[in-house]
Length: 428
Image 1 (cartoon, one colour):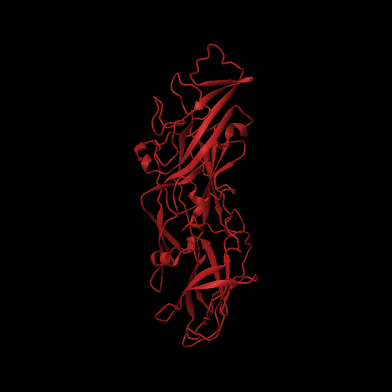
Image 2 (image 1 turned 90 degrees about the vertical axis):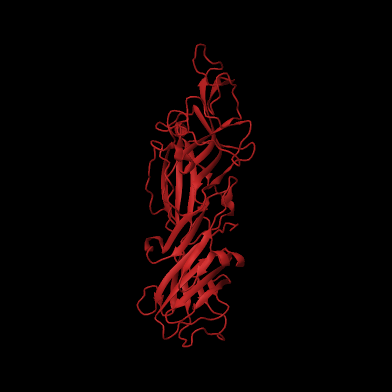
């Protein structure tokens, strides 16, 4: 799964009709009307109807020993929104109910990957061992947006069926994750603190999942996920000489439009890092890891005599600057290129087809700069200017400055209506 599929600009019902090319082949021994599909896809900001050109369809007709349709590809023909099979399928006159499953894009799995990942037959309907690419160097650009559909259609009393025309509603199978941040002091009119971000990652996430279609999961569009595997990380760092300087408005750290870095991850319950009773769980509990730098600006070209501050100081023009983080040991010099690691614990329940936006606030009236994470190691960025040591008197889980970073989680639906739920969940 190596390329993110884009499907933008879907509005309301999208008329994707599955029709046939010839009348030479019939599957049913007692053929009735030709089956066609009205389909629509819930919209994500990563997708456009123009790029959804092929989908795979499976069907199980009651009373037939084998699958009625076995993963055949329906392809869009022209600009009219119609999709066509290479052969016709008809709704048998002696069958009332047919179960349909579909996914797209049709080539999201290679032929070899289909043998491993796709198991759809009359007894079992599931995708096995789905594993979005992980890593520290923007794996999101390679993530795929899998959309799936399921319906059990009765042609006589089903509002989703008109004659032999079946409505298939596609839903996004993965969880989309975005991370934003802002300078809370700047938002309050205080520009004395400068916060610069060099990288951001989500750590301790299960990488692999099995998706099973089940009628017990109606609320999740018939999708039931089970996450597994050794926990990993997802995110990106800025190139040499680049960084994100936080302002009074939110800046995207993961999920910027220009780098296609939003993450498509396995739905799961993130394990909680309990800072009160179980700091040792830091290797298991999920958190957002940030490589950052914080300074504070004071008036006066020289540091006032008698000031007891031990922060490294740099004078420039009419101001001098204290390096607040990363902490330099007593006697150390100001280093304009120094960055350190801080983090924000999270324990969200990620649901399929939902978009979770983490809005982080640094250095506001009720927020600080996070807490010390477990000491990062390769492949996270290291080097002479990256300070990983925790200063004396501090430990993993302690605050970097006076307070943790405050944040809210905004839940957004991947639908044409945009945001349908926006509960704000403050986390201390």
